[in-house]
Image (cartoon, rainbow, N blue to C red):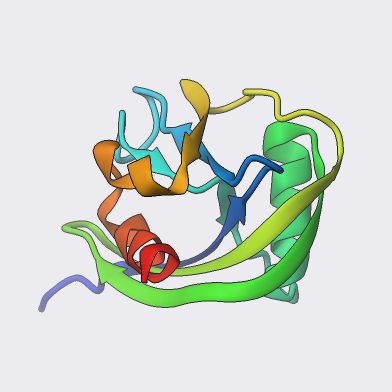
Length: 132
């Protein structure tokens, strides 16, 4: 019998600054999908709304307080070892400056240069939606 792949439900923040640049986060070498870029965020905990998860995750990961805006993308992507449901929202920082706690690098990237980075496959539909 085939082993069922683990399903992971996560949220990501498309954080834009006043120059129209998007905050991109590089996964560290010790994370799954190492050295690929992603939108910061994390797992949705039991009983949390996606928006609540995003506020909590960004607080934990970047030490910033954010306001969550409209949905950008809600996609399911199958990786070799797991299936991810990634829900991304536009967001703005209300308080704080992003601090790297888990990622190898944080970078503010102009919208039209997002495709120059090597992204985790699940994050690509969000870029497509942003550039549409």
